[in-house]
Amino acid sequence: MTMGSIARIIRNLLAGKESTFTFTRMGEIPVMERADVHLYVHVPFCKGHCPYCPYYKLPFDQDQVKRYANLLIREIDILADLYGRLRVPSVYFGGGTPALLGDDLGRVTGRLADRFDVDAIAMELRPENCDPEGVARLADGGVTQVSMGVQSFQPDLLQNIGRGVTVPVLEEGLARLAGAGFKGVNADMMFVLPGQTMGQLKADMERIVLAGVDQVTCYPLFTFPYTAAGRHLERKRLQMPSLGERHDQYRFLWDFFTARGYAPTSVWSFLRPGAPRFSSVTRDSYIGLGAGAATYLPGHFWFNPFDVGLYRNRLDRGRLAGNMHMNVGPRLSDLYWLYWRLYETRVPTDGLRARFPDRTHPMRLMMGAITALGMGRREDGHIRLNRKGAFWVHLAQNHFMLDCIDTFWTRSLDNPAAAEIRI
Image (cartoon, rainbow, N blue to C red; front, side, top):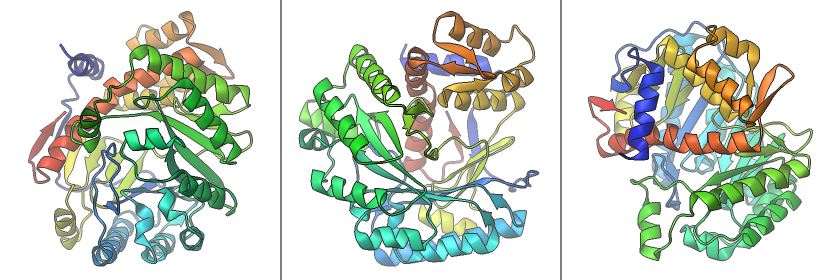
């Protein structure tokens, strides 16, 4: 039995019979009761494809980008007509390479500001997007927080993962972002890369701290079967590191950043003292705009089509582009809440008791075991994970959440018009 099969069995036991983990073709868009919601905007275009990237993406074409921006504006208007003038605490632009919207970025963010009360706009970037003109365009478009994918400063490691960027471009991009006046700058780094030594990891982390970014997010290399990463590593005859190597590198990262006063804000992320937190995923509810974007609202989880043509067809009907939908019952909703609190490395005890009032509930027992086994402690109304607890949560995430992503993404990319997807 594979680890993925075991993870699915445990997941189904915890969620109970109310959750079938099946996405079906979406009917009417539900009416949202709450007055504020985060937004995610997916821009699928890329000039170069990182082989480990699992998301829906397309080759860059300037004319297609402009047409796509028009579709995003149309979807913004449909959303505003459906829900009214929402308060939007954050808008996150992901991809793909969202900076490739170019001059159309201002049109999209301007329409968002016209139709909603937007507090902050965040965007993920490739180093190539961080030339002076690109950085100025972000500021003009109202972007307040940015995240740049660095991964490593070691040329051999960048080559091993198929990333065609030079170290000077990385350093110049970081310097421009750090000096551009954004409210927050995050840098994505990778660990347990094939062939990576502890010396290289230490050198990378020392270099990123000197770059002056506000937050560092450190991911292991994920190798989804449908990406080019697995094929690339096979071609290079490179092996993924062992569990022991993963543990040693994770322990180093935790100790390295906490010793310098950085606070863990997720199992991956470390925040410089006094800096604003940056996160692409921890939202209690959000609506996704664009092809391949996801939406999570109370009771509902849906995806837009992984195909621009199908996405346009949905909008042509004057409705949001939701395509594949899964009901989220109360039990699964509570598990979703706890999953993200563990991801953030701190679980509020009041929230834990409210969602799981029975002391013998498996989730209450699990949190008790976390403290009893020395993986966390009770502090300031929270159960806070320590290094040991955060490591095991990050490892569990690989086998629970990523297995679901792997299944859904693979089938959606293979057949965007599928009538049913069971994860």
